Image (cartoon, rainbow, N blue to C red):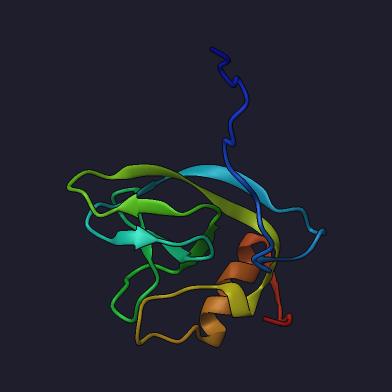
Length: 123
């Protein structure tokens, strides 16, 4: 009996989140607050007072800080570790915020201050 030692571990597809190669998208580890559900790559995150990150909403008390680099399941009762981009040149059309919220000019400026440049690219 032959056993295959090769299996697909994952794949990377084009999602248009990264708009340009410079400035380089630099990832870092974040703690995503519990109870937020399934979060998608491209979600704009806000750093809370407790050190955990939540998705940007109208009710968020913090400022736009970073962008989620990979999908994460934050639907449980405990915070989860994830990867986000602290810098990079990203496609504004690929960014995700809470339903019913629209990214404001102030949000865009906070991301820029942190090192995330935004460009409008094709969908």
